[in-house]
Amino acid sequence: MPQQPVPEQKRAVALISGGLDSLLAAKLMIDQGIHVEGINFYTGFCVEGHTHAIRKKDKAKPKRNNALWSAEQLGIKLHIIDIIDEYKDVLINPKHGYGANMNPCLDCKIFMVSKAKQWMDDNGFDFIITGEVMGQRPMSQRKDLLPVVVRESGADDRLLRPLCAKNLAATLPEREGWVNREELKDFSGRNRKPQMALAKEFGFEDYATPAGGCCFLTDKNYSDKLVDLWQARNKKDYELDDIMLLKVGRHLRPQPHYKLIVSREDGENKFLKGYKKQFATIEIKSHNGPLTLVDGKLNVEDIKLASRIAVRFSQGRDAESVTVKFTAKDGEEQMLDVAPMPASEIKKEWYI
Amino acid sequence: MSTYTLDARNSLCPMPVIKTQNKIAELSAGDILEVTCTDPGALSDIPAWCRINGHLVKETNENDDEVLIIIQVNA
Image (cartoon, rainbow over all chains, first blue to last red; front, top):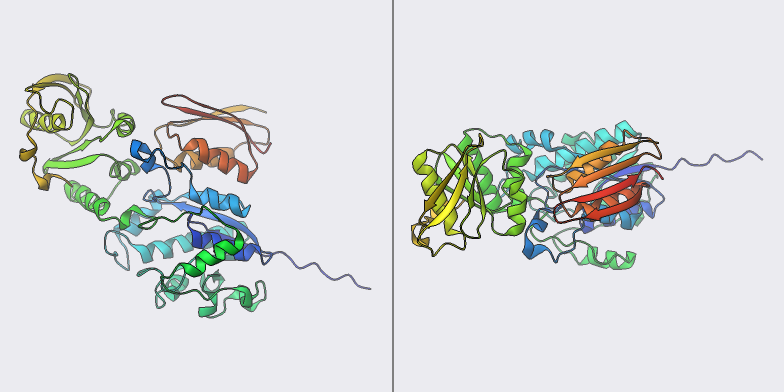
């Protein structure tokens, strides 16, 4: 009797964000016998990561990367890919524009799926899966925009969205019988109950429930700081350090030509110390107080004003005079005695 | 088998994980990689990445400012 050929196991690359939806989408595929590996893109703006852990108030939160946690729950490999440089063009020149803040969600999704397509081709995988749910998000997951992602990413019908596949036309993996369409889902809208029920069915507990999305660019305060950075430099560009520093400390711009980044507590002080060689700094010497980074070039009067502001946030805020050390970017140091600026003189519009 | 070092200080997760992943891609089975970080989150993330990718964390050390993670590749 002739031996039957063993069907080749199909391979899918899953975009794993660390959230519940991508976890469930990957699990649905694994349960259908698909070999799944995860891919996670790091843009520099991802909330996933430990930026919040710098601050002491957040120390009680478990320090875990949810994309890695998801992969571990699923028992799959996870490839974390640095797309910081390539992502600049997505953010600076989004073809489909920004959302409520500086979030180019649709362009971002198209870009990430196109990168996953490239990874799929390079690594001999068969299709891509995402945790997208039709109608769940206003920009990137609208029903009329899901086909835009398919088309502009180049993924075409090799992009499968297991959580809402039944609401969409059958993709290649479904038509070819690599996956059983009947076992896929028809989730839609912003209601999270179906996902939570499915998580319970799979036995997933303690999954991430991020408030406010997965990207700092959806945050108004963060976006304001980014726009301020571009305006001050008169060009839309950034390096990784720039966008990391937007997440840390109080940002004040007393004059158009310089900005102060004042740490809010010990954790931020420690983090900002790592930038002492890249910025001019103000350190409070006679009292306990924050480290302040100075972004910009200061004249003598600016140094006095900046020091008085920095001192305002120290334990010497009520003293008559406080001693500070100003260190220029070239390393030249000077000691100053300054009077703390009263709170009433710190203008609201200085805060970014 | 050789021992290598990786300086991932002053970068926040997931960059230490990405740097570790990219360095290990250049190494051979059995090699040792010593990674130094300043983000304490690396203490959970790098071992998690190692577990799902088949590498062995032989030792971790933490002091006030730095974290040291010693990994054996594809152990």
